[in-house]
Length: 171
Image 1 (cartoon, rainbow, N blue to C red):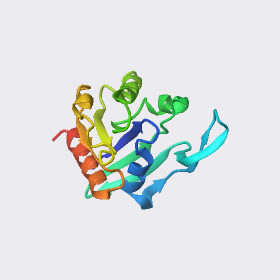
Image 2 (image 1 turned 180 degrees about the horizontal axis):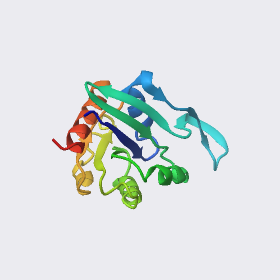
Image 3 (image 1 turned 30 degrees about the vertical axis):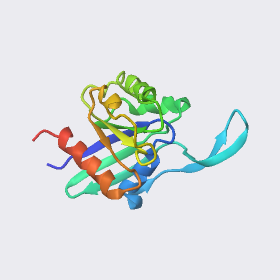
């Protein structure tokens, strides 16, 4: 029996969530990005940010995924609450440029949701090309598997999804 996994893609702002979801299947991607805006300085800044959710339906062989990329800004946590009651797996992206406390925040938040206990969990380290000295062991201390991935690389993204599928479904 085929089963589609509903996977939340969470993590701090600028950790690669939108890129990960979009790279997984650019034809099946649906999301909205707008220019970044600094609300304190009241000016536009470089880059884009996600408005709402990023969604992608992905099929790799006979494996099917519904990826739901969440906005990283904490002010959007009301969306996290809504989605936190029903997911099969969660991928928390951690940029090597951010302190480990960023990922701890997301683990603490989602560990209080009703789906956390049964869900498969994975931390994906990004931006290791820019920060090669990041100590991956710091993330491993959470007791969740840690993989590295360049969210711009389709093969690496699919490798992460394959790994998640293997740990998510009983044989």
